[in-house]
Length: 551
Picture (tube, rainbow, N blue to C red):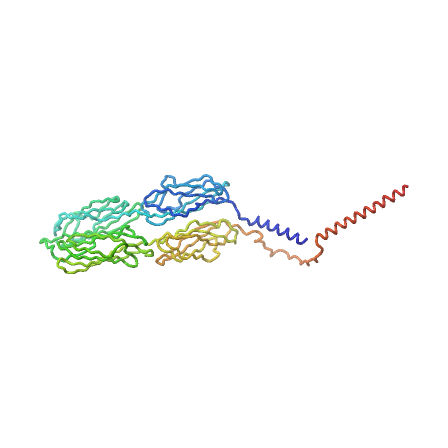
């Protein structure tokens, strides 16, 4: 009997346990299915993004609204409506949608995360929100606005001391994007050199279109003490692109034909200078290639140079010359003549953000065979992009207080250099089962899926934070956060039961083990049968006695 009662109690315990702790709550769950490929696009282009939306939950969803979660990515909806609506989706069903998007003209090459907010409800009116992320890569950027000075001229061509002269040049936009709110200031003016006749040294323009220019003129007063030979002025520039990003630059203007009243332009030695240079793209990104163009000029008014050899010596820890030699030879460069050279440099992946020198050394001779050396140093700024993207943070949705669950997430290194020592900790209404979760190094363009086990501490609506910390290639520690939330139920009554105030029950001695239940049942049935036989026998005897008496 005891064994039978124990089996019945165990079965009831299992039944009630299943009822109390079941967490198979049915709800809709909208996700982007199989969105693993990175969409490749070009800056300024329109494209169609195809997504497969799936209800991976156990309940139908309605009023599904899909909107762009962040405006940080250089992409926007090309249509007037920036929300996609699905009115109903049964559990397990999928739907393919197409979004008309456009990449900003100012987008840089690189990989970007495009997060979407998804808001939906079940048929009882309970609302849910989630975030899904799509990755895309800009593989061809447009050249940023780049203003240069070209077609420099003076009128009269020969600049004479103690006279007036008109300096003219073209301010040309070599970029593929418009330059807006352009401010240009003429610098290098002095009382012993050039002065602006009307005292106005600054000019303004609303914009300069890509591939277009503005003709500029300054009326100058030439000092009687001006140095003979080549004199230098400069143009200081400030302008903006469509995203209101500012650009500043300075361009040199060399005025060569400056003579005294007696005209002694034949004196002196020929001199080589870098009259202009630029980099394309203007912003050099670590790991990318750049075309470096510079112009060498013989500044002398009448003397030529011969046997010119130029050697380009970039910082070896930063730049590598692609597809050619680091030197070139020019047999002759006439007076006032220029020579332009373009070389292709590639920056190393782990280059830190700062300016790096490119030294250009010259060996040359004058017409009489006298040897000369000279060098110029150009600094090219390199930008390193360390960017960790954390997306699709999910769970734990429902837990009992004191129980543990998992928060899952995707991480992706969208920068150009390796991210080192990626580590995850937890803050808020949850605590991590382990103090921290170490992921390690993440190479550029790589990522994966991970999860952190957390313990629920506070009943009710609970919120937590995942704290991600890592080191960039400079050794700087960078931190980023992602929030998660869920619902925590209080402990079950049986877990909270306090028996400290209950009266102590007396000890009951265990009963001696008796007969089995089936034995007792047989004895009972046998007793009943014997009783019936005895009763029947007595009844018959009484009836027979009555019959004899009547006879």
